[in-house]
Amino acid sequence: MPTDNRRGVLFDVDGTLVDTTYLHTVSWWEALRQADHRVPMARIHRSIGMGSDKLLDHLLGPERERGGDGKLRDAHDTRYAEYWDRLVPLPRATELLRACAGRGLRVVLATSASEHEVAALRSALDADDVIDTVTSSADAKESKPAPDIVVAALDQSGLPPDRVVFVGDSVWDVVAAGKLDIPCIGLTCGGTSRGELAGAGAVAVYEDPAALLDGLADSAIAALT
Image (tube, rainbow, N blue to C red; front, side, top):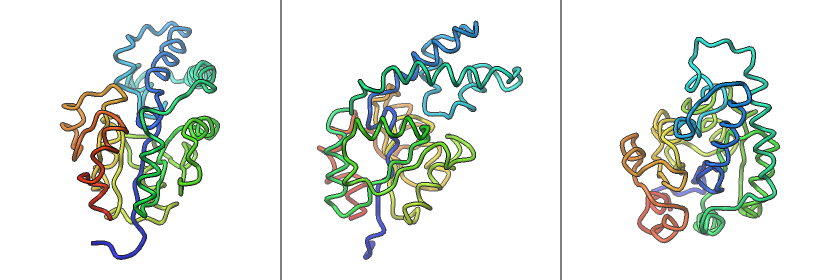
């Protein structure tokens, strides 16, 4: 059992702590539609959790003409920004962060959101007093499912990979953590099913932050303390 204080929980934010997955889905659908790309929302939703580079490859194909990618990203960002003042945390997300900190664990937001989006997410969570470290897209060369943002979170927090648990809502979160042999707890509140998360390698799956908080004492997070 760890004897020092270098233990912590890495949290994805979009769809895991803050209810944004479907807002991103609609924003990407609008951006793609403006450029005459007719992509069903269900396909877009399944891609949320990837960075925009991989998301566009996944939806439009890696061999496409990439000259319009910047405009697509800008259009998404503009649409998504319209929701910032209405962002809300998922059930008991802030309490979960405080409970982890109360157990002596460092709370790390391992998000690949852009820096201006991170500010809106942190405002919605209202838990800066217990958050130790926060990443952003600027900290990762490649987005999930590559593990770069997880590596950045470890580097910035000073946490070793064998003393952390990752919490995320997408298959891409689970895959990224798995590449570093970090156990990942999956939450279905982002719209990905229990079976998909477990099939990707999640060590446990809960409905939302509230359910994880209720089961915290028996979770992989408790095993760190």
